[in-house]
Image 1 (cartoon, rainbow, N blue to C red):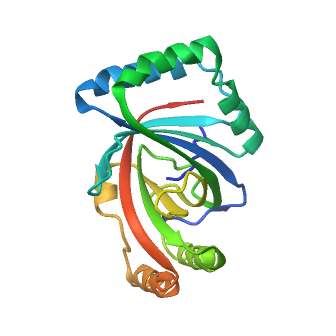
Image 2: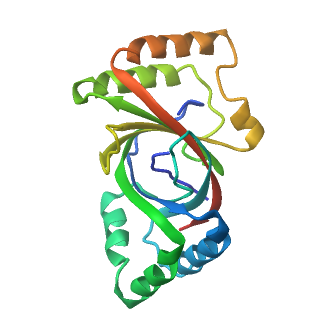
Length: 230
């Protein structure tokens, strides 16, 4: 089963895909005392949605995050077709949708939405249940340089799962316009993430040298998959 991700949501094995992915994220803050009811409500609704061909959604909890990051859950929609993704979003309307919003609304304290496209994708088949996001601020004129540095890094670094470099084109927060997203098969893999040999250490060092003066790393957060839909 193919799982494509947005987002989103870093750095790993080499199987570069020329296919561009489009993503649409809904990030929510939910009171912890209501998490179970909220998750059940979301699952009930999206289990009944007829997703267009090639569009996937991942529903996840956000378990690891930095200070000031209050959101607790994320709904991530991804597709290689921008039109299919737009069609799905347009279909979320009508009485059934309004009833869902009425049910889920009381659980949600805050919500924000962002969207964009992944321009570099590696290990597309290895979309694992644990995903990590690294956010960067990069001036527009330096985005090509950052992208080239990332591609150079991925020529050496072997990742444990899916990796993507994505542009944030809508819903930019605090100037963060580039995301690196990677997935892990389990917590141990996430805990031990990083260069594993001398060549990878050198590759990371070169990457840091190339992007250090043109970008600002802002935050990282990690989500755990609850359920996927397609």
